[in-house]
Length: 340
Ligand code: KG4
Ligand code: ZN
Image (cartoon, rainbow, N blue to C red; front, top):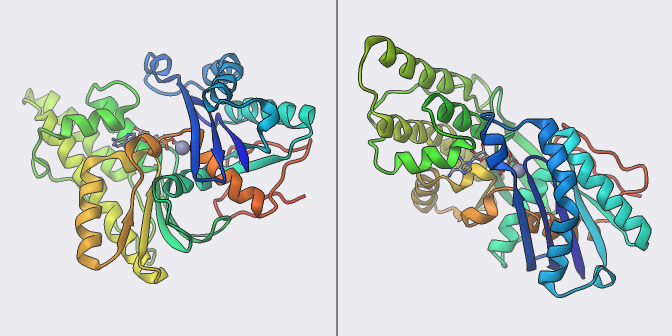
């Protein structure tokens, strides 16, 4: 079954073609990051306009690279939530137009389910159930993935998402948007113990996260050094920040994976590209006898492949969009999916 997947929830216009879910035959990503870097973060109105400008060419290229025509596509999958509402609406309306003018099924895909599906592409033998740590620009979640479209959120962030904290810390360090990858690079030459940064603990909620205290600590460290005229160890602070985020994420993820009892922990989302986090997960999962799944960095960020892959499983589960399909800025990862 051939699925065209379309993604436009934030600042990447992306499309891909999958065959039976896991086989990706084309993948096109048009990033707007350079444009948003001028403003230090994503400007929603600019994102929507850029999606409108790029979406036709991105989809055409995805078809072309796959060597297929629209006629060969069996279903059209699109991210419909969560994300920037104007950005999502561009993808949803484009996909609707394509689906209803050709009579092909429309398959709405939850963005977080898409991120999780990046693991199916990277690991052809991975099947649910498993526990998944999702760490992106907008979300930090621990999810019991019971089946391809049946999920239970076990824990989430109480304030900032992990990626958001990375982007804000990067900004105060004078690094351009999107800052996560920049901090990761800077941290490569730094000492992860150079700065003492706080660890948040939430009473009675072992699988919830909090990153705002950590973010504030980085901001205060930079400002205090400036006020005292002290030299800032930027590499050390970047490495200490990566280590602190890792300390925040890994123990609850291991604990939740053990609670789920599947012996499998998958990781997804842009922050999963972080080298310090990947290393710590590898070491600790090995020690705990948990099988670890982390997609390559290219599949961690937003892309069309993950939507084309999840679109296949959502189609199998009977998830369909009609002409009245809407986009949603927020929608829980375990909310019921539209079934016609
Ligand atoms: O999943 P994603 O591409 O988009 C959302 O759905 O939000 O995640 C983007 C986030 C950004 O905050 C970005 O700074 C962060 O992922 N990120 C990283 C790395 N690469 C991207 N954070 C830490 N280390 C990285 N290597
Ligand atoms: Zn994403």
